[in-house]
Length: 443
Image 1 (cartoon, rainbow, N blue to C red):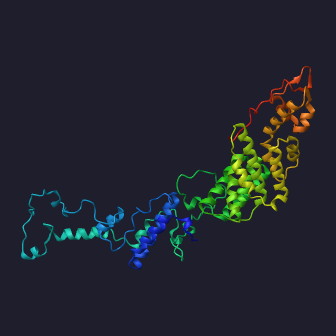
Image 2 (cartoon, rainbow, N blue to C red; image 1 turned 180 degrees about the vertical axis):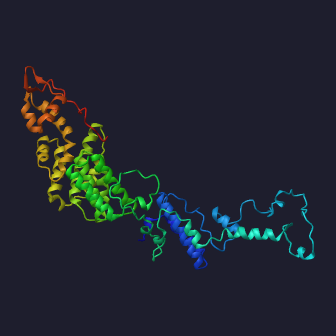
Image 3 (cartoon, helix red, strand yellow; image 1 turned 120 degrees about the vertical axis):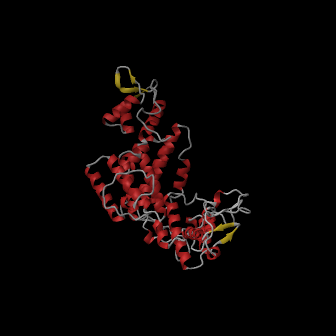
């Protein structure tokens, strides 16, 4: 999978510079393996776009001298600063000499043959043993391909990694973790480091995990905390393996629905945001249904923003409405969501509650979180429009107040009853609250 948009330009230039230094197959092999390790670690640590690739040292090749290798590791292309005019001794004894001191060997040469084996280097005598030690030091930089492979982090299966595609582009798919865990149920834990493949479940196991969660949720065997943890762990395993297909869509749709049933609007919003990106990739799913939910969510955010005198939600609503084509407006779910938006914008509580009763799919759960604000707004309008009294039953019918929840709302809303008559509300003395004590807000 190519495309410069997926990789920093500096990284592309770094790869080109690395391969430009190669003089043969051995150099190319070393460079290939070094780049595998480097880019994989950058992906795992989320530093692919933040890393300074221009200053990153190039891989050390077989033909590099110790000095060149050290300069490459330090990111330098020329001589070390301040190195000119200085001479370095190789033997331990000579390294402690002052400039005005003369080197005196511990043992006099025994023959003329030994003299021929001595060499002059920058004014210091170096024995054959010293030369051998220098050669050994030089060999430290001549790492074989097998040694380079052993340096690659164990979290990634390097056998299947390929840094470049046939077109010369970096291959992100080759860097993806391939899970090996066969554990179906797994609690969600926030990642603080790259996961090991043994802790990540492959897609076939994830499909079993999703079906298990759905089955237990329908039977009521576990609560929302369990279901949310399991679904988030499935989402996490999909993310680290870059799984983006119809199964991924199914995971997020399932989690969104479970969150709606449980009143977890924040978790629902996370899911529907990811679904929007997946639908844009033309991955099949219930795109129209969730577009309707997105319209309703923007209505809810706008209602919350009004309490704090904020314009939050307006931009989101404009973006969503721009996605609604004339053909989509004929869909029942979209038409219902647009009607709800209009009713809220016009403070038409009568129409809102008619739409509330006939909400399609799971739209009723999203309207549930709007209902308290709509009811309070409706009561304020009623108290201004109807004087001096208003029947309690009329309020119940208009605002769909039923059972204990309806009685609790009337008690908390700030309504004042006519003295000696609990069936009628004194609209003049009523002081409607702006929010219920148990009502949550996003703003």
